[in-house]
Length: 224
Image (cartoon, rainbow, N blue to C red; front, side, top):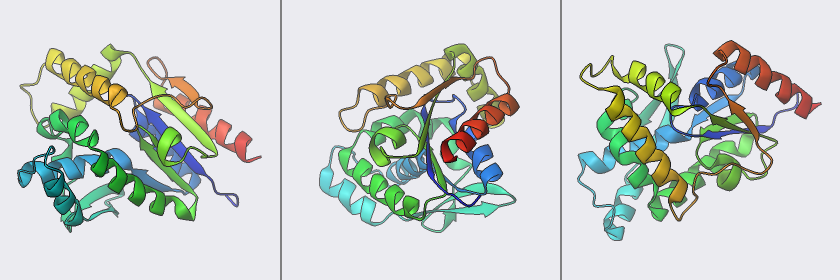
């Protein structure tokens, strides 16, 4: 595709943001940037190094020691933290339970937004997260805002996590999703919200293939 643009994909937890963003990036031959993985990587580092998120000097020092990069391994986008493959670890529930709290810290958000903007300078990128279309790239050429019912999101997340922990219950997963949604939507710094010019997609009752076809059509229309 000759014309390359920045595409923002935002939405609630487990609403299919990453699935859509990855599929779009593959179809368009764009760079995919998983901003949620970046916050998960910071959360993992904080947990492993016992960083108190209320201690600003400690947070700033920790951020200076964090290097996050992405690499394609076995055809999958893989997250590395200080040279270590952490893709599986950051998807575990104990990280999910803390990532929204870490993401409320202004210093963390400033550091991640700075990196995300640097990554997006080359255009031809798709970023998924919570504040891409409103804060990171408010002038993105195309913005999608993903949503789905809590029941559907719970089942998706449960299916993903039960490969790691079969003791998880739908109730525990739903509670975690609601907790994250609340924190992300009410935080003072860069809260989760729908951009005014975003295309809203409720994928509760459509397939991934239908969703991708719909979004690709919109991308082609916007470029044209």
